[in-house]
Length: 400
Ligand code: GLV
Ligand code: MN
Ligand code: MN
Image (tube, rainbow, N blue to C red; front, side, top):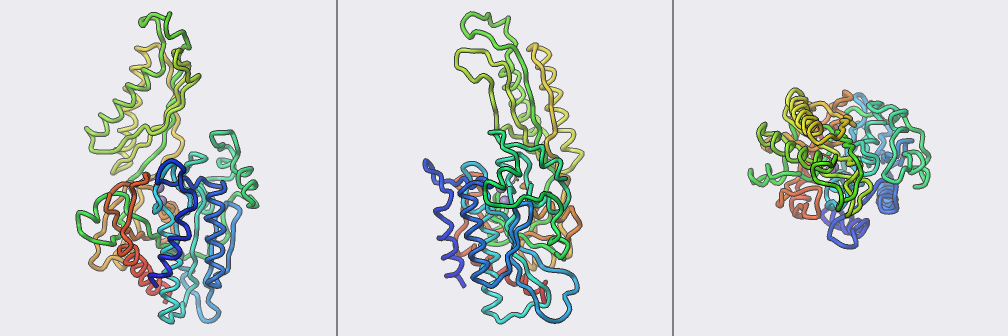
């Protein structure tokens, strides 16, 4: 079994590696992600899994059962193959590779499933291209409508369906029929913090996901000459933005929550001009939905107050807000045994499927660096193997 995991891991290792760092950029519907998807299809076919690609760009390999009752629906596992800009190797692919390796373990055990087992590679989980995280699973579950998805464009103005068609897919946005066959979902994922390191556990189970959201802050001002405009005459949206970024950090620290401005666009983006516009994206995450609303409200109030003093304008748009997720407690308990059960502030397709009413659980594999969304993300190979075993045990129990 370990060889199978190791071989698959090294197959994927060169795909989408950034030229200048040790990180990865597997942007949805581009050549790197397309290569990962082709690799996934090949691996499914090598295991006689029937491959289905839906109109949302999600790919699923099915281990069908030929006889007997399939009460309860299929047991779904898998994760995603896309990455953030300059991300690590593990966020997403670890869940897909471990799912395929877990199928191998079950076959080696001679296991005959009583329910179909399916492995999914969901599309655009990170929202790195179209801004909306978990786009593939949201469309599949009907959480995002085709109309909402059609209104999205990437940074070059390319629309979702055009990007999919250019990647050789046949877009037909909307609920995915295959999801109706799914009775439960177990997603394995690299841990994105240090809980399992601190608890000295190679594998843990997720209890739930913090509510979180992405908010676009459009700051507008007056473009002007950097040399001739007196400081007191300026309406500089960069200043309003800068103060807002500091306010976000302070408010989140005070409240024990999370707030990040990680993406900024400036117009016209010239060294010798006061900008006319700054657009910045706030990512905020809190323990409760009430806390999230309060945190974003406090940040927006400080930003608006500052805009008033700077003579700039500010419009805040919530681009996506995901409610709190509590994973199925009985499923979590069944998977946990004596493993730690921990919450996470990272979003996942598992959160979308859980919110859509599918009993869902997550397994986390220890990340010794505790760092994620960065090339420094890591998991030791022995822990990856422990994750595969834990997933195989879970699938065997659920599909018996
Ligand atoms: C996805 O990884 C997210 O939490 O943003
Ligand atoms: Mn992920
Ligand atoms: Mn991620």
